[in-house]
Length: 210
Length: 210
Image (cartoon, rainbow over all chains, first blue to last red):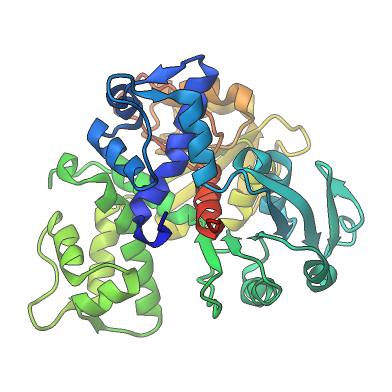
């Protein structure tokens, strides 16, 4: 598999495939045709076949897809079976929302620690996740390999925190800070969560022209 | 303008155009060629011209785009000048993070109220936004037109809360609950924020093949 050949649009659809297959599996569906699968995804059958062809051969002519098998295969393509680790940096409102409510494990991640400067939090646990002082982040990362740093710190320390994560060898940064991070290490992937982009798309869709 | 002719991919790029133009404007840039603009967006000049052609004529041959003018035009296309209103339902961690940290005004929205059942919150304000009891939501919506309901409630009341919002005439739901809402009113738009899709795309990008 050559990852560089897979377009961003296909990569963005893979999690949706996984999500829909998980739902279909939960509903007890064992197999599905590419056209029926396309319907649940708002895609054509041929688009689905083309997307999946980036990664190998899936499904059978006249049979369709085995829901659980395809779900398993896509989870492997997504790297969900690699036991990636994550730490949350910044246990403010958003950090806490992620720690307490977001199921990292369902995306194949282990959330192993969180960091903050608030002395009321440091030393405690949130949803079973230990909170350490932010000053100890560098040391922690030196001792413990971490795949992804979840960045929920205030804006003014976003870049310096990202620099620390990159220097200590994380593979990816899940960036909620709304700061465009400058990353000098090309192998490090930054995934930005832009709430405003989502709200503006909604704004567009609800705005009737006069 | 026929909105139904504009593809989802173009709609998703509009907020990015707006964000990049805002940054360019803040940097003091007055005009930009479509190829230079494309470079900052990771798009080709012709893709940008094609996207914008969905909405009219922009830019001038040999001049490029006036940054502030295009920014203004895109803000109008996005409906940012319509003074949409929003209420947050559910002032838990995520709701509070949005109320306190997300700049609704920068997306053209007025955040006018929030609702929760927590008696410690009801009657108070968060970042200047009044918190009312969730029991009064229906009455509030009957009195006060609201464009968008921001859904940050626990999963088990996501659908019933959405039903109330739809019945009282909101135009859109910004859904953070991870519940696939069933909406019977076709004019109501649901914009889902799927954290897991974002994390899984990151997982894919950091997962090296053996």
